[in-house]
Length: 339
Image (cartoon, rainbow, N blue to C red; front, side):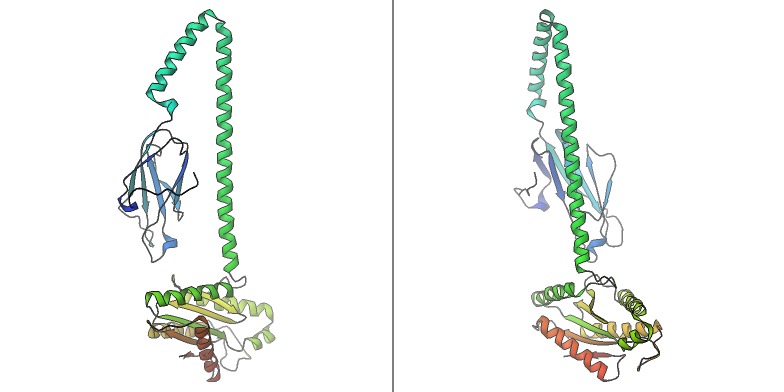
């Protein structure tokens, strides 16, 4: 219990699993091979011989069982793709749980013999007293089983609560409190991972830096509360315009934003940046003090590392930042590529 089990042959060829009655708590972990949007996959399972209906568990991929009676079962799993359509093929594993020694045929035979002896002895020696003691013992065993079941359920609930709390903590750790985008801490971690992956998989990697034009003047004119509202709208526009499952939309700091685009070429990243630049101005957030437009605008610096070219996190950040600076120097509200 609580430990991974190594099977005698690879998982894809496993059709039957035998378990002991001592394995009173066990779990199956499974996953569908869908790399487009793994967090949208949903699962359902059914243990034939125990469950009458399919059990929908959402995007969780673990099924746990406790205190199964000895016998034969069939564990079935089905999953949806990223579009929510259930697959026609099921994962199927035959499961056999050996009964405990006290539930085997010879054990029951022994029970019958003992019962016969008890009945025979009870006829001669205090029949009523023996029957009373047996009833008390049964009550004690039943009470003990109930206490064990309650304790097991309590532990399972605590474990689930702990897992949920850890997930919420991780989200808070990497989420920007104002905009809801990823924060700078997540950006640093994610860009490091993507640079390393870029070298391994020989794929292009693009990075976009964006800065809200004349934002200080906006804050001075409209106040910080309106400034926060403006940043939230810009962040939402970025999220809606660049809805990528493989990349990351981040608030880099202040009015600066960063967008990581794995496996994205020069042409693709330029198109993404130009569409975002137009989308920001199209929101028509008034900015009377802007020297560039009557509305809030965004200057973007873009850098792409071609496949096969090595780079570093600092180099990419510096190149994107230089491109952003050059775009501001040329008049803002534009997309400028870096090298």
